[in-house]
Image (cartoon, rainbow, N blue to C red; front, side, top):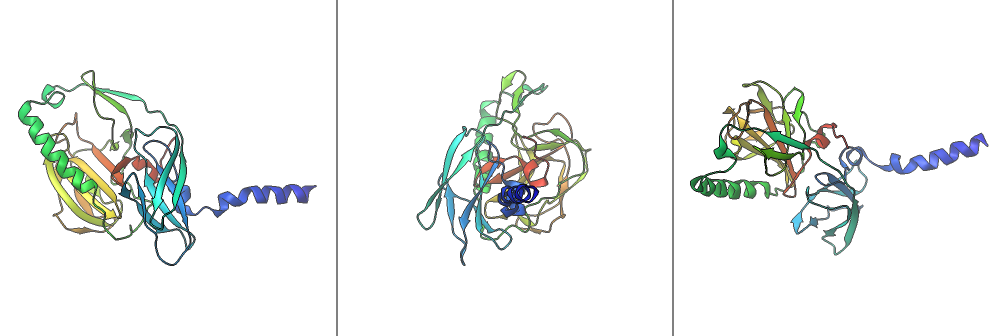
Length: 274
């Protein structure tokens, strides 16, 4: 009986053991999360698209090819599909996740209800940043277990429903770290600087392309220490913490984007909490 029980337990454990490290780290299929979809084995990397946009595809520890798919915050629970380049359609299940509210008081009411001339600037800056988020370079990311860009406690998690002076605005699209002004910000993985700007809401901002649509964005910086097109190693300093743009004080705001979808950066540093 003990032998049978042992064998049964071993069989039940096989599916979990069959998952590779990347799947165990990243597969959090909820709104604002990441789905890992197996594409099968083969010599050449397949291509895949989700909602019309290309997704990151890598080979997991000499096993199957996998698609790593960013799931929009507004996605409801239920089945979603990706299209594979060979004509297949593969489905994955999205669960549910709730996000709490955050209420922020801003003395500068213009940052809550911008003036008409501000709106023209905001639209222009949004288009510029959208193009960066939609970048899709051919290189494979150097690593998917990211380093923290700064060492410090998290002050605001991803996905918060945000209210500025009582008015609801876009959900919080990244992680905030409570660190002092001037703290060096380090690249969580190797990449290329694809956009630098000084924006109405984000202040001084740097975008880093890690490969195949995996993009990091850092904003509210006091200083930018890189140039456009510069290659950054993992741990390379890209700027300093500040409070530029719409910020109530110095902190480090970090976005992670997959297939032009902002996802929870906590997933990539092993700090995800359901």
